[in-house]
Length: 339
View 1: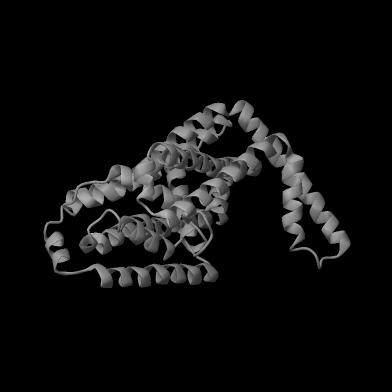
View 2 (view 1 turned 90 degrees about the vertical axis):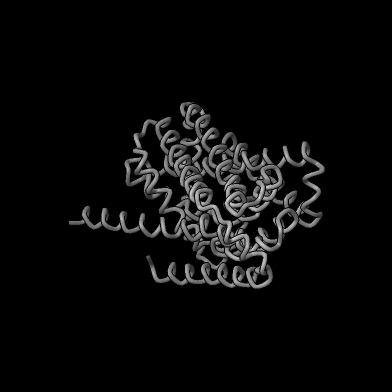
């Protein structure tokens, strides 16, 4: 791991640890000890296995989307790729920062760089579609339950849902009209290249146009020849998020509490959408605060602190451990290739 990445990893861990300690300080009481004595370990193991199953579904999504474009990616290679992605996501703003790792690993497996980029970006778009549709479903079908989370978080959810919907729409439109994507990238990049020499700016603009054209051609091929990959991609995306969303209910069962599947799906949907916004490395601190605030509406305060610790242990700290192991595997592979 690079020095800069180590720094951000420690910052991410620090944010998370400070918030968790604060949550425990304000929620642990005598009743908490009683609940811990009744802890049902099998449910905790089941929650961990459910998370591993979710990561397996992610690997299958990559495998089948790659296959639809004519590439053969082994399941365990894709799984290691996902694990490596989790570590980078923990040290970059939001939890959606592992895309370059996935592109690199797909490229190392023989996938053309343009195709690898298209697969990874389409993955994120599928996440947005599934979460966006899920948000719309809960907003319009489960109105009474939705309102229980409070107006402030409801508005935050509305904003997140609208932003993701806009991004998805722009993405779909840009597939047909690449000139729009070019204009957007030129406008954004122009803010960072104002002091460049005119010749350098011109060359950079030509590079953008060339890469957008290549990307557009790859996406066109994906939409025309890789439709099976999109169908399987949506299927495994739904399975991935469903598994991640039910983990809290399994943890509650482990703490001797009744599961709250519907409420938990709503809360997890809000957290998942907000966690995509680049606020802190890996969303650390933000995730714990939102979890405590939202689940505090449905869960006994005596177990709330323990619940958030267990949840982050599985979805954050365990991910970092998996990422470190995966990183060692990749480093050993790279070392053998250079010998």
